[in-house]
Image (cartoon, rainbow, N blue to C red; front, side, top):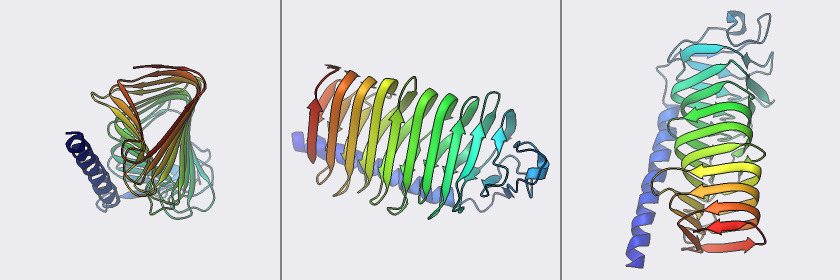
Length: 307
């Protein structure tokens, strides 16, 4: 019976990964959308200044920021919902997009990309206001950083970190404000990249499901201070080291709170490695499995786990 349950779980995971791969292929297939590229040629660095664009993007268009000239700032509600927002699509210098108090940016129909292509560099700063949309891809084949120090990020589907043939390097730092992901958050897809989520201080991450290190990739989740990570989907799961021989995931907990509706599995898949070091903090979960099908390691020197 146990093997049957595991087989069903693995099949379900494979369907999720197939969906995510299909999603990324679809995200790249938006040729019907028009492009508006940031030039930074206006009198200020505001998103809404038309002189900063070669062609001002509208609803359903792609907004591309691929230059460090006059790095854009969003400080008011941008009414348009763009197909894609690309930050650092090809730039070898770090492109920075800032959303601050009063700012609302919506990539409603497809995705917000940070460092999409090989060698690109991008940073998104959310210090206030709102970033909303369907999906976020951080550091797909480049070096992408998202810093949330205030405000709210709301994604109706997924956040993917890495996923670029082993080239992706990404950081997702949440020290204040709220990040809400209705679907799945994946940290570290495919080998060669290093992908890290840091939830610290007063940061809050709420997601349906969470995978750390999957599909031969490397991922790390660090929770400290008053950082709070909550998996709120019915039967939500936190899988550390999932799918693929060589997937490596790690959790380091030095404070904060981790809530999971269903289970935590370290070393979920055969050939994968999942580890956790817990020094302080609170975990609430229904089941905690160390080494389900792969290699698991759990070290606890402090904190509390409620099963």
